[in-house]
Image (cartoon, rainbow, N blue to C red; front, side, top):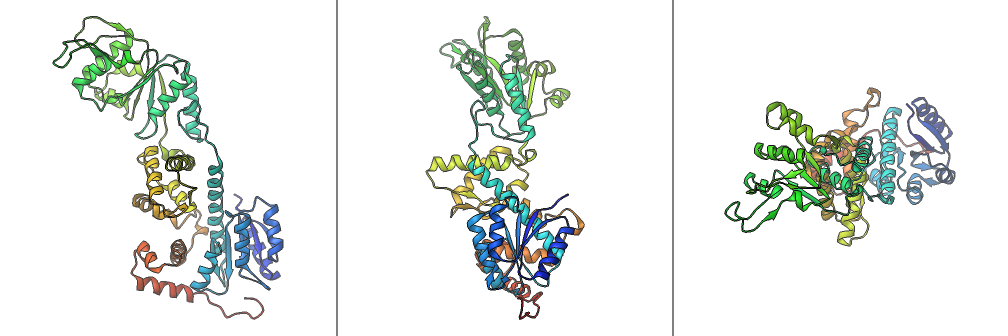
Length: 464
C-alpha cells in the first residue's frame, strides 16, 4: 500500500539523495528541493503533498522559516524538522514555528517513516476538519438526520422508500442513535407532513395512565375523568403517531394495541364504543424484540404487526467519520445559539473523538460538544476540553498508530514523542505538563534533560 507523498528539503545533496532513496524504498512518494523558495513553489503547485520533511539548517536559511511560511500557505500541511541540536529549546522553537515533530541526528529512517505516517494521517484529519467547516449540511426532508457513512445512507434510503407507504414502521437502534429524528424524517417526507406528528415515550408513563393517554377516556371512567378526552391515536388525526420504546409496553396494553392496529379502531377507557383513527403508526425500540418475544415479554403477533418495515439505525461507533460531521454540525449550531465567534475543533481532539466508542451514541456526542464549547478558553477546542472518559478511553491509541511490526518504535522513543507533544500543547508549561502526564515535576525535568542529551552528535562545521 502506497504511503504519503513527501517533500524533502535539504541543501546537502548527499542527505537529500539518502532520504529520497530510503523513503522511496519504504513506499513513500518523494519530491526533493534544495532550498525554501523552490520548496514553497512545490507546495503551492502540488496539492497532493501530505508531509514536508526539512533540515533545520539550509545554508543561509532556516527550516523554522519554512515552517512559518507553510503555515501561511497551507496551515494543515505538517512539517517535520530534522536537527542536530537535540535540545528541548530547539524542539519548542520548532513546535512554536508550526512544526508537527522534530527528529534529532543521527536519525533512523524507520523512525522518520513512522513520524511521516503519523503526520500524513494528521494532515488528512485536518483537511477533513477544514472541509467539514465549509460544509452546509442539507437537512431538508430529513429533520436533522446527518450522516454520510454507508450504514446511514442505507437508513436514509429505507426512510425515503417507506415514506410513501402507510405500512407500520419499526425503527430499531441503541439509545441515542436518533430514532425519533428518523420517525420525524419519515413523517416530513410523507404526504402526512401537513398533519400532526405526535410522539409518546411508552416507558415514561405509568401503566394505569398509558392506556388513557393512548386511547383516551370518557367522563366517569375513573375518579379524575371529569370530561371525555381523546387519546393520542385520535389527536394525531391524519398525521403520524410515534410510539417510542414500544418494547416497554405492559402486557395488558400490548393486547389492546394489537387490537387497535388490526382493526384501525380504538376504544376509549370506560367506553363501549370503538372509534376509527387515521394516523400512521411508527414505533421504535432499543431492545431486541425478537429476544423479548422468545422470552415471553413481548407478544409475537404484535411484533409482526408493528415490524412491517424495519429501519435499523447504526450505533455511532460504526459510522466512521460521521462522528466529525456530527461534531461540526453541533458546534455550528451551538455557536449560532450563543452568538459566539468562530471556534474550531483541533485535530488532536478530533482524533480522540474518532477513537472513542460512544456508548451514548449521537446524544452523548452532542452533550460532549456542548460541554467542550462551554469550557473552551480560546478559538479551538483542544483535548483538555474533552471529558476524562474520552481521554482515558483513547489513551492507548494516542501514541502508537502503527499496524506493522516494522513501523513500531522503542518505548523510550514513544515516551519522548508523547512528552514533547504534551509540552507543545501546554506551550512549555512544565507544571501543567507534569499534571497531565501524571508525573511529579522533578521526574519530568529529568526526562526532559535526558531527551536533550540523547543523540547529540558533534557539530559538523559545514552542515549542522
